[in-house]
Image (cartoon, rainbow, N blue to C red; front, side):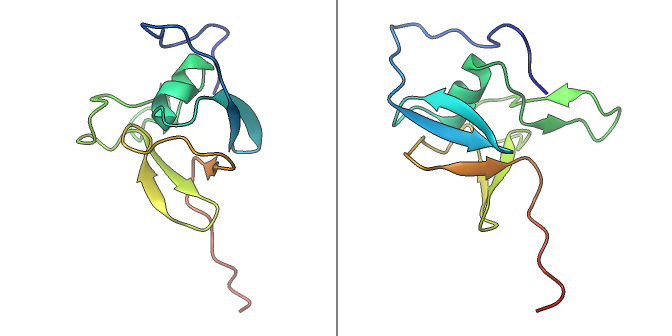
Length: 102
């Protein structure tokens, strides 16, 4: 789920200083910006509509709609519009499945 063009444009100059990962894809980001800003600037969506399967990303950008829900690899659920980028952040679009053998 990636667009060839940014889906979001910053109002000021931006100089990425770190990289986050979404489903194994490296995404350039600035420490402290919201995760959704970094993803949209790189042309990434956060998920798919449960109604028709179309690409979706945050609708409200203020933590109310939960369309930007992502998960950390440890299973923590977060809203990309409310979470700040930090070095080493690794995310996935779907909740990690627990190992049933343990």
